[in-house]
Image 1 (cartoon, helix red, strand yellow):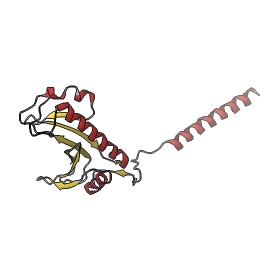
Image 2 (spheres, rainbow, N blue to C red):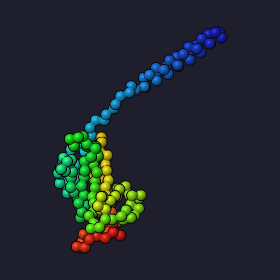
Image 3 (tube, rainbow, N blue to C red):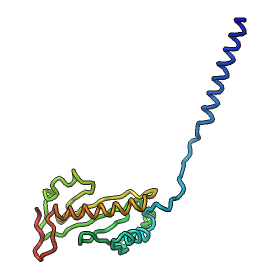
Image 4 (cartoon, rainbow, N blue to C red):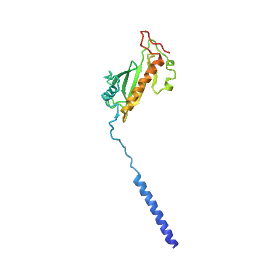
Length: 184
């Protein structure tokens, strides 16, 4: 009887090990690339005219053009000032872009110093810098690879417009009068 119990116990353990091994094989997925089906609510940087149409549908100016290099850009405006959308991380022929950078700069008569930014780069998501002439710029880059929701993109535009207005206050920009803007 003890032999029968040992044999039955051995068989039960063997069955459990076999079942576990089979279960592990059944659940193991082979290495493969999984791609999601295209989502019509997503937009990417592959079609600049679609980005321009999205801007226009949300009340932004949208003037699509090409730079001398052939790179695509869209001119828009917020807070009474222009800003640009630059298509970046593209193929050599400026197609299949992966990034859109929102950017604007302010042309002061005299070069500015980084002190004009205060704590901007530590406190804000958009980043400020001075160009080679000492003029302040603010910009924000959006990773568009694999698409972003259209409403998220529109919200990002609105958010950039608000930060752009705050940046103008930060640097003391005003074109309401004919005198050159002075930094704060």
